[in-house]
Amino acid sequence: MKTYSIAIIGAGPSGYFAAQALQNLETDDQKYTIDIIERLPTPWGLVRSGVAPDHPKIKTVSKVFEKVATAGNVSLFGNVEVGSDISLESLKDKYDAVILATGSSIGKKLGIPGEELSNSISAADFVPWYNAHPDYADLNLDLTSDTAIVIGAGNVAMDCARMLAVDPSELEPTDTANHAIDALKSSKIRKVYICARRGAEFAAFTSPELRELPDLEHTNVVISKSEIEGAITRAGDTPEKHTKSNLDAMLNIANNESHPHERTMEFLFQHVPTSINGNGKVESVTFKTPEGEKTINCGLVISAIGYTPKEAAGVPVESGKVSNTDGFVGENMYVVGWAKRGPSGVIGTNKSDAADVMKLLVEKLPATPKEKFDLGASLDAKIVTQPIWEKINSAEVSAGEPLGKPRLKAVSREELLSLGER
Ligand code: NAP
Image 1: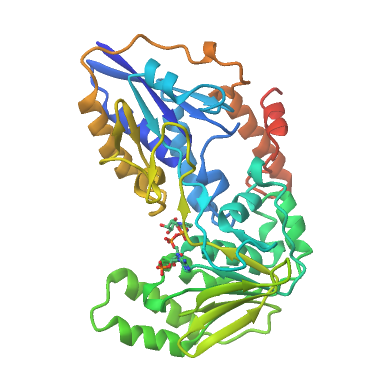
Image 2 (image 1 turned 120 degrees about the vertical axis):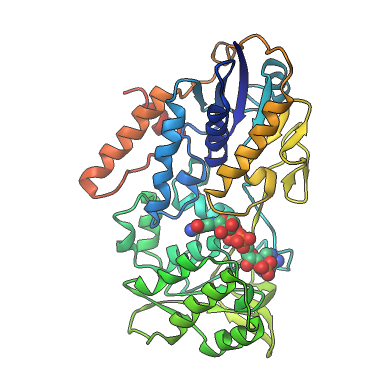
């Protein structure tokens, strides 16, 4: 029997789905030992630090990750950073194959004047801030104006807008970071615009997310009926299924009566941002619209227009993806998930994607496996193993229980590591 050693860098959804695919590809004659290396003291990637806290159902996929992690052939090496704690080159040298599952964490830039003004931020910073990611807890955010503008028409834009527009009491029973709930409680923002550069027929939202908006208890959701009727006409008689269900959901919102809520979330379509204006700090955004130029006053701008992978030594990035052919990067290195395809698809998309790449990886393995490498022995870092992570996890869940939250997230690395020592 042959046993190959595989390193997966990144303990997010695509990393776990890659491990699961390898488990499914095992035969009596060929096995895999899998080391998952994660720079944070916590695994689960975007399921922990990306998915909106008011969407707890999406997070139940973490049960699948834990099943993969405890199946017997997987070891977690959390709090270990490739590049500083161990080099990519040495991983390539010691393992039969190395899989990059590092996602896409840098927010794309609008490239318009004023983007660098204070309080013009990226969703790539705002989302991990409200999700208690250790690296974003100190985000400098001013919520003292009455209006915020979110640029982009995808689900991330919608998450950001909803987080700003709901009554913070609705976030109490969620795992939103405490620092974010406190900041949102004192927020003066009452109007949030989501601005799409094209018509509603091109919006990248998905319809389940649109359909839940009328259920918001304390927020008016406003969409212009004439915009949606125009989009329906422009989409023609045989729109794609996704377009039709989005337009149906938006028409439903447009037809809703307005409520006397203090908070409003309004969708604006065909608004191409041309500049962010202000003296040192955001004061307004100017758009090109079919009716001409339009400027909307606001004190906060969040751009949610997509992501690109972080550049790292030895990892070629091109057009927002790690350069690859069907997941093969070169030598014994592979890539899965957003780092492979770009930032698209829901969490489940990574499952079939990783399965295809792992099939290719297994086909390309050399005839003889390398000798098993003891990663733990070669590291100085305080490693978060699976049992340590389980302690952190149950400490967070227990702390959340009396507060009616699914978990109370620890934020700093030190706090997380100390939970694992109890
Ligand atoms: P996305 O779905 O690709 O949407 C990006 C949006 O940004 C598009 O509306 C795009 O408009 C717009 N945009 C791009 N460049 C722009 C520019 N220069 N100026 C103005 N607008 C610009 O990306 P995302 O929202 O980051 O989401 C990433 C993936 O995660 C998606 O597949 C999404 O569905 C998924 N996700 C899912 C959930 C969920 O299931 N609940 C939650 C969050 C994210 P154009 O179309 O005009 O380019």
